Length: 561
RNA sequence: CGGAGUAUAGCGCAGUCUGGUAGCGCACCUGCUUUGGGAGCAGGCUGUCGUGGGUUCAAAUCCCUCUACUCCGACCA
Image (cartoon, rainbow, N blue to C red; front, side):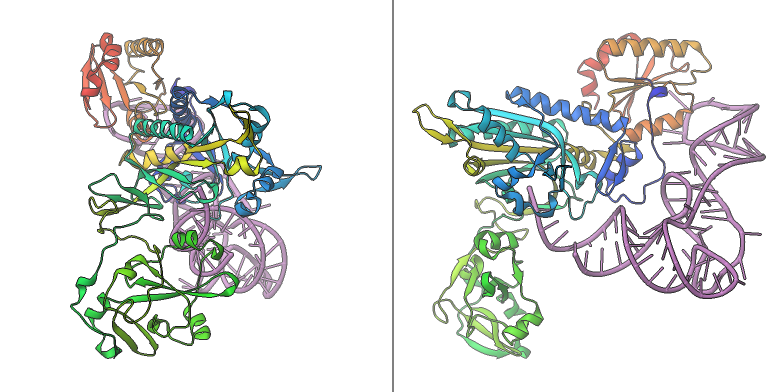
């Protein structure tokens, strides 16, 4: 490609509407333009990057013998009714009708469509296991799109689905896919983690997420500093330890707020009141500095989803006590305690009277121990649940999620195959998503400097840019540049010749912003050598033009970093 | 969906409080000079001041309506 033919739409100005580094850089480097909230147009530079990411993913899918398909971005709504996700998905599913009044939706994911395909086409166990995948546009009508491509409404995702005769076969494919995802992320040169995760509306019984660590990320990961334990914040657990060492021995006493000091705060337990199914109330007890985890609550009390916390006002109306003085003793409500609360001795809680608290409360002595459930978010510095290391909490961007679905979809959609012993069995399924447009943004979050994007070699819009200097002065410079351009194309490099009649400074800042990894300068000054310059470390080396291909293909270039 | 903010040239912004000729920088066009870090000089083009209504002799500016976009939260993977 020649720069004179390439649509390069870079900008010096920092776009006012972009907050994230990746969003700013993608706009400034001319990769994307915004069309509407969470919807983008991809420009030539961006498309080249996207193509490289697709290539990388296809290579890994090929390697594990997955079959590429392409499903429509429009889906008949009947399939969603069949899988019972029609209501569950809510307004995120963008629905519309065709001229015959048949209802459709824009594809947010493809479990239904693929299950429908397979139940029609695959009748025998002899075809299994089978992996199908596609790379295509998805649409989710997000409540609040933000951060550029990181949470867009329209995005490009690779989604894969696997079909098996049983769980052990699924486990095998799941592990193969897990490894493939690791290889993909390694190629992106990003700091990432795979973590155990929550299945959400996709369903199933086991899942892992792949996250790129970034201080700007929306998600939080809980990681052990000394073991492999890594989990999404919403399901992370910590080692529950007995906390009776707080106090020697005391007995139940009611004290006034005036005597309430630091010492009692340490052992304070707080009470939250939630409204459950049929408006019944439930009291939850948590250690004072612990935060209630909605997801854990909802998982355990599925029928009370979504969690409804009573406000101070509600509590005054319903219970008639001030929120700060609620406690389990003498309370006429069912109680559930967090695991940590169940382990604490001589604790402090409200006395259900204004300005009064009980201290020295002990389970079984002072009141029976109610149901125990893990209800809280873990805190940084706690012990890892595998007893090895302490927990760190890091921000991240979720880029991939793999699920063991089991027979969730095949059962409800009646997708069955004939097994080897002659009986019909539902397909055992897995599904595997990786957000390409999100991974591009996250890769930029991880790979940039004050000049712009620093692309990993294989993902950059071009591997090499040839920059003739003062080419208007000497024909030799032009001739050599053209010669090298032809050679590099022949050697199958993704090369760009910057043949524009603009000043050098302009070219340099522009290619630094766009992030081309390798730059070659051809000038009168360095004759007969040419200058190789590296985007990442800004170092230069002077080489003979004839050695260029050898230099670029040899290990030299890697030692150079 | 709750809260906050913004909307003026292609982009970034000033002007709005206190109503009275539509401004600046970048970009763009022309010419000359320049050419190893987004050049300099001279000249030029660019606007339904988001939409609709109201007040006024007069509205970018004051009042009301709607819309879009951004941020925080909730939600979601």
